[in-house]
Amino acid sequence: MTALLAAACGSEDAAVTSAPPSSSAPISAPASSSSSPPNPGAEALTPAPEAPAPVDAADSAPESADGAGSPPPNERVVPCVDPSSPVVQDAIAGLWAPIETGWTVIDHTPGTSAEGCPTISWALARDTTTGNGTYYSHVMFFHSSGRYIGQASGKPYSYTTVVGATDTSVDVRYNWLADGDSFCCPTGGPSVMTFEYDGTVMNPRGDTGHFPPPTA
Image 1 (cartoon, helix red, strand yellow):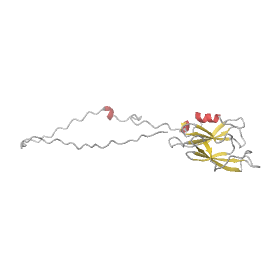
Image 2 (tube, helix red, strand yellow; image 1 turned 120 degrees about the vertical axis):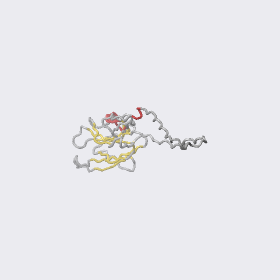
Image 3 (tube, one colour; image 1 turned 180 degrees about the vertical axis):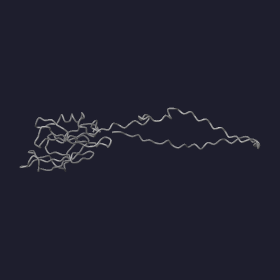
């Protein structure tokens, strides 16, 4: 994301072509038009070498230690998702939970703009209030242009993990507590849902899993 998402996580290199070879034929000295025979007693003369052309000092100056004269550096390298960036913080501010709580990002798309960021990046946020292992989670999606797309669901769920991703899809795994389960060890699920980008929003794919049941 820009590379999000500091500015969502890019740089382009211009193609460089070499100059075409000259089509001109080699130039030789013209033959003498004089028909006079050579003087056998004359000493052969070696023409004096031409004086070298003046050299511009700027062209011959060595490159400075700070890289002056070198091509401009590449763009600044940023993470694909930066939890402290304005776009991520604004997204977090809009998350809903049935309790009064704050949110913190605990996982997100790895990598940097130098390695190449996907079209769709994600961030997993967890609530900061629940302390019994059933904390609420939201999965947020971001476009590489720096735009916040939305959440996997308006309702937060517990025991939520991102388990895979491609350039334009994200796989989210849900577990939930079944009757008699301890908070540490949910046996409901797992259900893995794949969310795909349709050019505007992220939609759950119909042939994949489902959200946890309403009672979860």
